Length: 180
Picture 1 (spheres, rainbow, N blue to C red):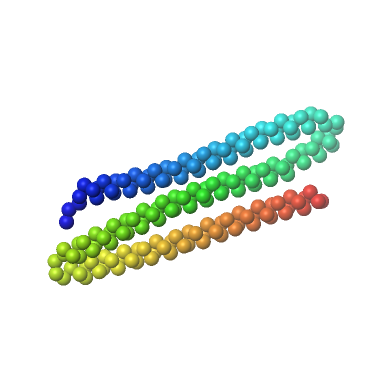
Picture 2: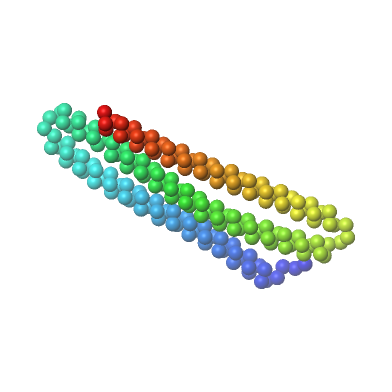
């Protein structure tokens, strides 16, 4: 059994496509994070200028202290929004990279099974047991991989639910503080 140039070319092409998919996913995530960071810095700068102007216009110390306490709430809300945006970008990038990995594992499995079938056809008598053992190991590995993916997806869902719950808790505390 020989490897043909076409098989080498197809493998190289598949690897390059996977590499490009990973690079595209990473660049998209980087671009989104850069936008989020630029927006956050601009907003913080504008808020700082507005807060400074408000403090300069304060008539007495009590008004200055009162103004400072009103500055904290919007800052907390913006920090939460920023954290949530960064988390969403990270989650999305992770999902894209997982899809690429799943496709590559699937392709690898198909190629390996095909190779095993070719080997078993040309193998000497009595090697059926070894081929069956390899196929069994591959099936067990695939089952473990599927279970690992399910666990990872469940962990991601739990983390997303916790982030949402924490965000709602902080917003609720902020509303309660405003009401008080």
